Every structure is written in C-alpha cells, then in structure tokens.
Image (tube, rainbow over all chains, first blue to last red; front, side, top):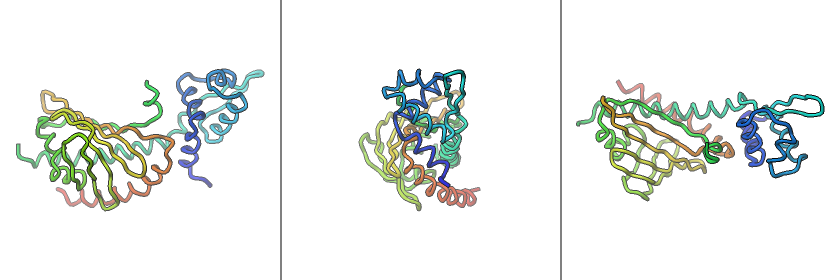
Length: 107
Length: 136
C-alpha cells in the first residue's frame, strides 16, 4: 500500500492539478465546466485531474442534475500540516535552548 | 495572498523573550553561541557568506541573505535538495524582545525532501532529547 504522504505529494506535484485544487480551496465548490474555463486545459484533462485528486481524498464530488460539483477536502492535507508541526516542534525546542543560553550569557 | 505564498508552506515560531535585542542578536550571530542552541557552524554576519550547520545526522547548507544588526537576520537553509529561507525578526518590547522565526519555502511538490526529513528529523529529535535531558 502506498504511503499516504507519497500519494499526497505525487498528486500535488502536477502544477495544473495543484492549481485546480487551490482554486477549489479558494473559491469553494465548482463544476468541471467552471474549472475548465480557467484551467487552460481541456475538459477531459480537468476531469482526469479531478479523478486523481478524488482518489487522493483531496476533493469530493456531488452530483446535481447533469452537473457534477467538486469541492476541496482540506482534511486530506493533515499529513502536510503534521509535518510542518514537526518542523515547528524543532524550532520550539531550539527557542527553548536559545532562552536557556540567554539566561546564562553575560549582558 | 500571493501566488508564491499559496504554493509554499512556512513554519513560524514567535516568542516574547525577556532580554534586549542586542543580547539575542549575539546569540543568533556568534558561532560559539549559535553552537550552544542550534548546531556547529562557521557563520559570519556578512551578506553572501556561505556556511554550514552541522549535526550528527548531516549538514545544512546556508547562505546569509540579510543582516540588519539587532533587527533582522535571514539565511537560506538547504537540506535534502530543498532550499528554504530562515528569517529572524527582533522587535523590542517594554519587557524585552518579540523574537520571530519564519522558515519559508517548503513546497508540497518536493516529496524527496519529505522523505529526507522523515529519516533525518526523528533521529535528530532523539539526539535532542538526550541533550535536553542533560541540561538542568
């Protein structure tokens, strides 16, 4: 089974796909047609990207009449957020040591 | 939000420190002091100076980008094929200094960095815990 982080990064590595995802994050739920108008690629290409995003859990689709609406699933980004939390933890510990040093330093 | 900001991730740590900026500046810029809280290094507070931060798990390649004594210090932080930027900002307050660190430029499309980070950081944290355990 592929690592969840690998899937996430591989999915977001494509700039067109990432742009589609970012648009959904910024502007909320949209149809393939609306996304295509601003994506600069064909509708089948946008649909394919949305399929990959859906597989990675980054978007969800909702059918309404003849249209399919897509929305971003921010919860799927949790592994990235966890990673930056880990980096923040690194710096927090460095701050602790820095403060400890400052207490010991001469004026 | 700029396009660049939406494509990269930053880590920000900010803290009120009960010491004047001048004293903190020394700890941020003098190699023997940097070593005490961060890593072994050959830092010089000179724009363009290239230096390394060295630990058991590897080295971080850095280059000084900005130096404004007692106010701001910025350097690149390159490890595992990814270049990020670390920026320190010191703002005097009535009780000391607001010390802010931002590490910016983590790109979601660089999985190799993530893998490197995954193998490197846990070991680093383990080492760190041992060091911290020895400090009163």
